[in-house]
Image 1 (cartoon, rainbow, N blue to C red):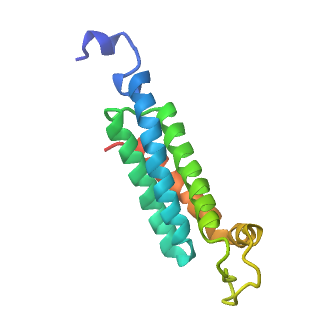
Image 2 (cartoon, rainbow, N blue to C red):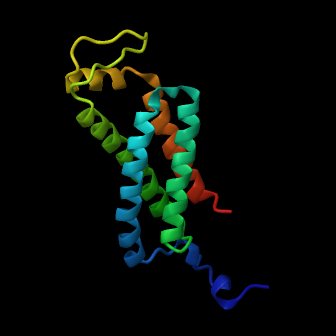
Length: 150
């Protein structure tokens, strides 16, 4: 048995996002993602555990977006949370570089670099494969949380 609305074949109300709630959810989700991105970049040298925390970070951002929009889902929500996580990690990376310019960075092999210029710090993070893994796992966690609402 189906109700009249379901029998007509219209899309579910779960996929119809109100522009007002979307406009409210985006900046709040982005602010939380930037703070979480700063934390993730700060602990990015923890290897496997950083990837685990990145997944939990993505799931948390996805859950926050779901709660702010009344548990709505769909492609626009997936794009929003994925973009927020990615922008949050990039902004967090920028914050870490800006805050630690002047400190002596450590190389992946344990030695300390000579100059702590922002370019040196950026190269240290860009050469680290865990940086890219954290970004991919964080986006995956956020999108999967929105997609498999349970």
